[in-house]
Length: 232
Image (cartoon, rainbow, N blue to C red; front, side, top):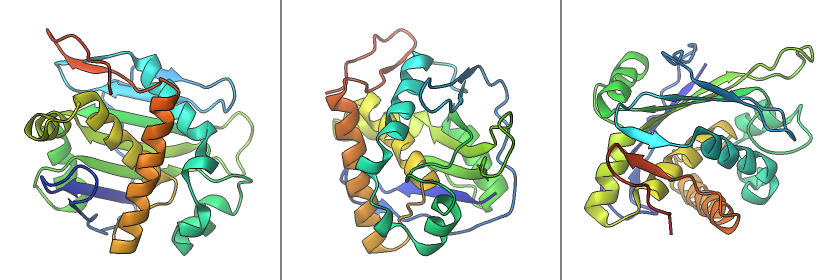
């Protein structure tokens, strides 16, 4: 399994982010301590397993799973396979008739800053805080129909999204959804290690968020004692 780390400088919302570290290890993604929801989509039948590891975060798990299913269903509109790097294109898409995240269960862990920093230290030898780490899984290509495989795991810092949104006048739900979209794009083969790839990934993020907004499927997140805002 290969983790990909994303960390942003506190700059503009759409561009000034530090690239991924590029470090890669053959490891298994960390198991979510208490996975609470394996939600399949009737069309793709991909289970989405969601773990809320933040004690103050409140949200509708089915709405988050539905947003991921929408990204899956419209992957061809979000992704341009010609923009993917050669390794990702051959590994993820050679056995698939359509672009997107490989088949299998997708795991999403919404964590505190400190919890994600521990994963950062454990799997990437970097104890600094970050906002998103993605772990590629074992796709379902060639498996029996009863075996779903593991598409990968997206681990997100809720605290990082909340802090950035507060500092820059952004919507918290939109910022946290952006981090989820970023992880989904990593699993679909995108990277932002080089400037050209970074620009393409930002454009794909924008397409994905526009799609969610147009379909009125942007998830809403809130902290305990705070009513969820409707993302703009």
